[in-house]
Image: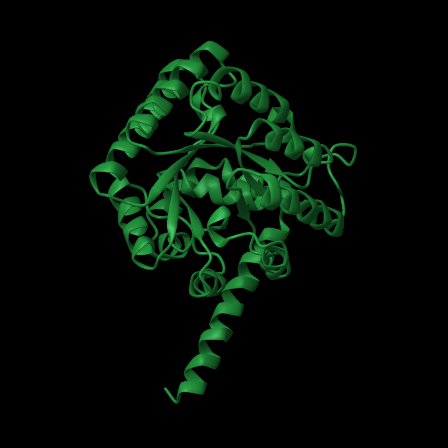
Length: 318
């Protein structure tokens, strides 16, 4: 019921128009989305870079309905890569294949994504292909491995989700071919025959895949806000003699900024995923609808940071 309500809200243009022009709502959204324009996004990246944090920029927008929209999305990513280069930012980009025409035509999608990868290669940058629901998993992996990876090995990588039962096998295959992987838990609601229904099993699969990637993978990105899993990654790295420059932690813009600061202080690499664009309202609502527990997760993180900040102020006599 709650999930359906959130999805309903995400489709209401009148609510979007109101929220988009409501100062309070935009202020709240700015915690998790770096504005609507390229300038606001690159400014957010520059601020994070100054803190010793690298970034991955994502122009919001998912499945498109025609070739013109797909080409426009591709051109925007080329412009984004040019801006990163021109401003000397420490950032790469993440994109969704459905925004590049994956649901329209494979040849069109390949043409658009290859144009982005050509620019990334010219700039010495990197493009991460985000993973969407399980309906796209095999399609995306096949597209990546057969159409893109042979020509852009150092400039393209994929995302795997530990919620899916198949992911450890996909992890082993990614290690075998030497491609870069971003490992996350996955926020999509999936059937039990495809994904683990229990959080403990998702977490256990994450740790299993994480160990394999840290030990034998090609510079994996460990995307998690879970303090227990972060601690386990640090412990495993120390136990196995894995240098801090062989992997990176990845987190979302605005989430657990206290943990982000701690990771950097301890000398580990951190990349923050920075979404931006005019589609921030549907983006936030769909993310919450995919996993309604994220509402409480986000609320809890904000309260945790507020509590942490209060304790620091009390302790310092401020």
